[in-house]
Length: 235
Figure 1 (cartoon, helix red, strand yellow):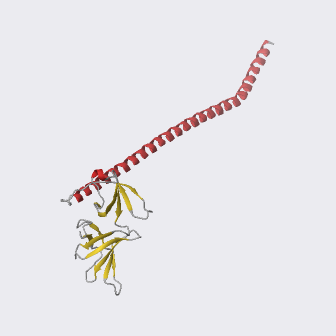
Figure 2 (figure 1 turned 90 degrees about the horizontal axis):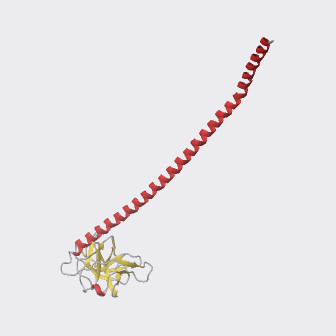
Figure 3 (figure 1 turned 180 degrees about the horizontal axis):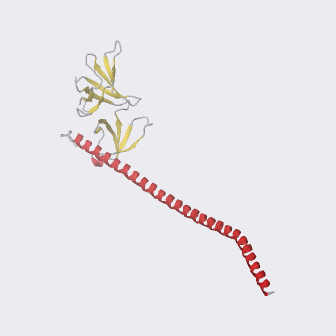
């Protein structure tokens, strides 16, 4: 009886182990699945944090790039201003017998009846009506109105503007006037004068309104109609 009891117990123990192993299998599977899910969530959180970090870094880089581009534009503008001032200084040195005053344009209305600009120098700086205004490229206009700290300049492209001029090569005389289109034309050129595209037009000094030899522009074309007494050149 004792042996049978032992055998029964031994047999029962083995049966229980089998049952426990069978019951533990799903638990092990669930545990593995839970571990995989947990690891996946950890990886997802880590990936999200990395994405946020990369986005923040990207925003920092974009901001730094924008600052660098703005600084580059500013440096280019400074270099351009310096180049213009250097060219203007070289040009003003050609007026050895005349005082020159450097000014900046502070206002321009392209839709106004008259083509004018306003500069930031006035009577207290020595500006007076009738003074010619030039850039390093040549003649711009003349002063028509002055206050203590500003002056209005009538541009040579205004239709009411007339400038005594001549061709630099042939020295043929004429008059440069503005047009409604904003262009210039040289009128009253003698019929026998040779006019070619590319000819430089400069002030003649006649009439005393402008000093001589100030560049005005280049001839782009010419026309001469039948029975006209003069030639006309577009500038």
